[in-house]
Length: 131
Image (cartoon, rainbow, N blue to C red; front, top):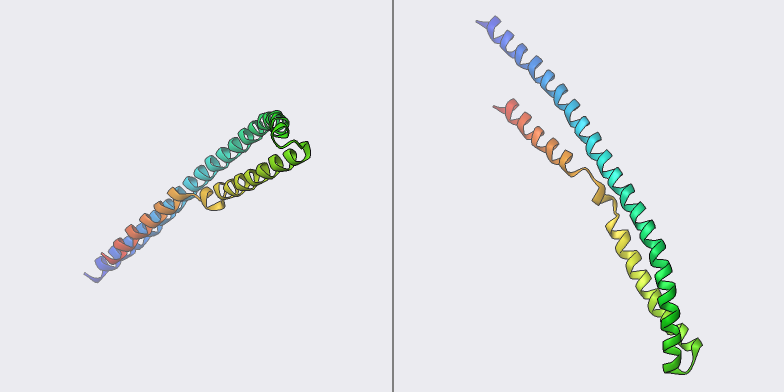
């Protein structure tokens, strides 16, 4: 009887080690896949921002020139009109920059599915060991 208990315990330990090893390999593969996808998405987003910025700069230059010329007729001073328009645009640029910094934070790039999966696996393994 003691030999059977020893073999059963030994078999359980070997099975647990094998399962843990396979699980670790699968989790690492999931992590690499998810991280690769997140990085690809980040680079595509950055490329789109650059292209959009090129067009936006051209449009902003034209609109700014038109706005300054129109405002100069209202306030009777081209210099004052340029200062008003420039100040408003600076405030908008600061707001957009702060928003972009927040949107591209590292927490947005974290591999959330992998973290949840590892937590689930740890719970299952602890239940197996306890049960």
